[in-house]
Image (cartoon, rainbow, N blue to C red):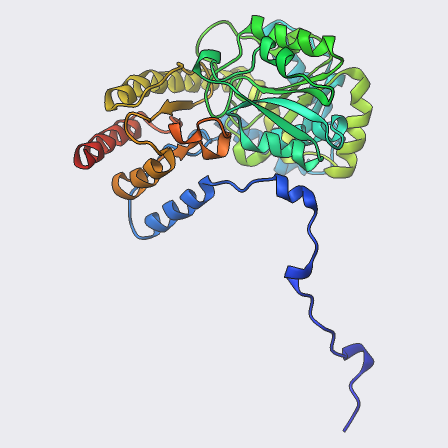
Length: 405
């Protein structure tokens, strides 16, 4: 009997459960809403028709000028790596956008094009956060933002912000909660999940309070193009030391293209570029060439029409929800979310969201993912769907409430 080849000798199989995991994973919570999403998928596979008011994605796709630009880039073979900071032409276009929209001059050299806003936040956190550094954030807030901090072994200090504060941090809160371990703040304006913005004067006060303490301010503005009330404004106007994150996903309707940008101080350009080179090489070259068309007059006209449509939906759904017994304690002024108080209908938003899914065929997201301050009191409701769907959702919820009363 021949001896087995030494190259074919059996090896003990690796036991996946024995692979040691990094301790930082304990600080990163799973998405509760994913279980809801899985159940929704099961119901749709069974033939149920659902109305999705939970997903944080515009129902519009990239407009034709953007698709045409992508097709030209593919036909011309412009698909090679770009600089880690992005195409010079795109950085210049973004700089012109700040000047045209907000009246603020931003040097293109300060703009780093990234693989989505998530990559921008990842780069900002990698550059600024060390082990055990504390970063102040509002509660509620988008969960991934605090998880970026945890990924670099920092600590997100969640400060409860209720309707009286428009669910946002204030300068007074920043001063009251700043500790020797605090290194900065991470803000979102307009915010997911609340759709509320920080008033310009308040934001200016927050930045001043952080600056006085030698900290950093990161402002997530990925919904900034989707504002419906007040004059356009951006944190880029508050000083070169403010880091601003933005994205082509929401206002520009390019979610799956994974493209965003980060505005940094000149002193941080080289360190962030070094990180980008190592972590991502560059953002998608195809998406970058396509995004150049976002700033053409043709595309801008389409985006403005869509923004007005989002506003029309907001103006319909807020009073419609209140007629059902929900309370909207703060009128959302941006994004496409409502943080609705459902305590008059249920003492558990999580259970209510499941009942609405199973019995009414309407998908809404409970507050559990967004913080620990009264998460069972609120539902996050997205109006990024057609007005016809919104009307049908209201009718379904009305029938559900009548039966369950």
